[in-house]
View 1 (cartoon, rainbow, N blue to C red):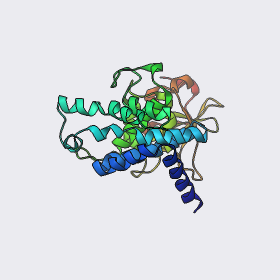
View 2 (cartoon, one colour):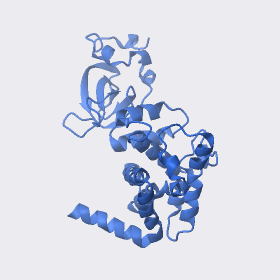
View 3 (cartoon, rainbow, N blue to C red):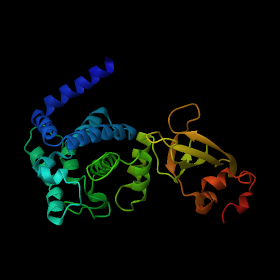
View 4 (tube, helix red, strand yellow):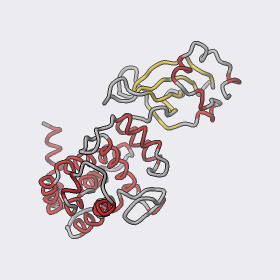
Length: 291
């Protein structure tokens, strides 16, 4: 009951702060069920990563509202375009690309909407490399909230079933997103990974206890990532590889940061599960680690 009461208190606070905008969300549900559910999911992801970054509860609340309202402009996009199972033509893409501006216009006319929500609504399709829309902003022109909104938006879209694609597993989505150069803020993307406990497969990471690990695919879809612990940074020597999880179990590890293995004398070509599990890995002299 305590947890449920907190949810209700949040809803009460939200409706008090900007009731008209929340009524628009209810209308959005009537227009497009997927966009409504996606908005609720992005709200949840934004709250989660905001807490991971140590934001105040007031900021967490605003980040959650920003996630909830980010796609409100899709109310102004033709339903046939939203539901189209095939590839959109250029005019249809243009209609979809207009939704951040339409959503911003709706929110700007609504009393009580925090500035973060307006920002995320308009800029969640911008990219750090300047190749996004609607304004082609880049780098420091994009706020932290907008960059996080982009991450949460794409992650939930990739892991959801749509008319034109099946849902990807969380691990597959995160691995793809990490590999898309220029689309996301890498530091914030890693913080997002930490917040959901799923990391890009093949990534070498710093772990608690002065260790390095290689991220492996989960054994089952939907589970958190597995990590193969293989190196001690305190001694600068290989370890007998052992499995760990990021799921808070007895054998779990805390994933602290992405690491360039070459900084520890380890060639990238050596960071493969089969090699690290091999009998000779832990006995390998440090001088021969870098190939």
